[in-house]
Image (cartoon, rainbow over the protein chains, first blue to last red):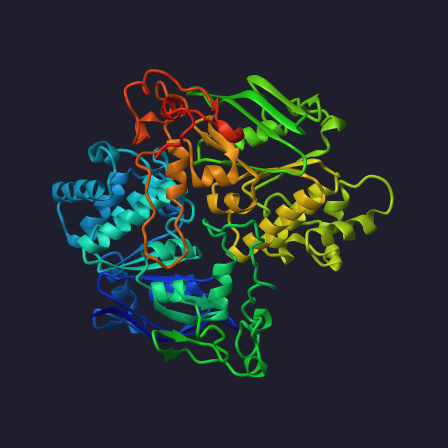
Length: 318
Length: 314
């Protein structure tokens, strides 16, 4: 069953198209991973759903969540919904937590507003939440302030706040990017447990294909505001077929790589909004580009076990 | 003789809450033409050690020598001329370049003598930037390109050793790959010694010849990168490596290491890693294991490794 269905999402900021026709569906208890380089539109496509775009932005398309279109909803309703059924976790828990309010205050204020609990019930709920995200000594933690926690603990607190009202969908934008690998592993395991225990769907935005590889069920690879390849995790990351997905994976140092061979960097740089190349946006950096790639945008079409936007499809047999 | 040699270095920070020992006796050597990776979690003291290595923070003990000369902490006076060939690249290329000057003039600052413009163009080429980039400003470059500008600027001083503090953090995979390849070629082709501080183990595994694993101010394991990676001889190195997610699409969650780096102001008794160590036994909280040499030029500070002579932990 789908929790969120995005159809034909297009975002323009000023004169630039940042997201250019994106479709996807997030199912119940699924981790849906979105990957791509900086500027690929992965974060903007999420902010659009939450009504958090900068001014001068226009949005087209639909995003059906709980039977309603998030993009057509009055602002008041969207605000009511986000924080309750729809929650967010951002990259830097130091900027998303209020530095001058105690952790207890931030947790209880939130549940009292959305769930209409009295003070005692809200505090009880806050204690449960902190225990759920494995904060040691929750009672003491309630009285402490964000700066008294490490980065990993702060991110756990941010997740506790996000989960406070029992959301159906959690949008996590680079939640582990600022953390050590050991702490990152703990947060990934926490998200994995929570989604099973709470029937929570997660949209995970990251540039780290290792992170997606370990937790996502379905992945979508973004390039210049479009999805170039999407499908089950093991299919897309284990046997990539789009030259961009393949190139992204080849650029990573493989932990078990035998010989000291140089990493294969992708030539050139990702395109800047406003100067997206015609045709397939990846063609100037693509080793397999043919003439049609220069002029015709390849559609994202279902092909066997995945969806792919490539005229050439050079790795079809690989 | 090593180009850069740190022996038993101690660094204290004095604050209102008392003294914190950020580095508690750490040693490492960087030879010319070699890349040494220094890894560990945030708060383990790796950046402090890097700063001490180039004289940016004063030491409270131990010795640091560069090409035979003692590295003295920076004062109000000019940095001694003998240290010019020891350079540092910072993590954030956005804040380490002057936004109001062209990159060409910033690189030229470090060049002595004539023909500066020619040398600037050469250096830009070495780091893989177009030579007409010299007349542009930092904001006209991407993060990866800016980091190359920062490297070109250190190369202007004709260094023999460069210390790089998290140079690859905050870059996309492809930019990271380009920079990692650049670091390898700098050490191979120009014979530079590089001390690469990073929390990204996969990239260190790929470029470093040797690796030093640091925990709470001390080295817990040192050795050749490949043997340390494939058969870690300290439970902490083992845990760090197991926490790296593999980008293979297999859907295996990385192993998490419970707990956090303790407060360096109150380090645990005995082995500093024992509260988080899955293999700890009664000796670990009582006595601190010294960093002892193992076969193959490796060293480890773990009682278990000593007990089983030279076999790595399982």
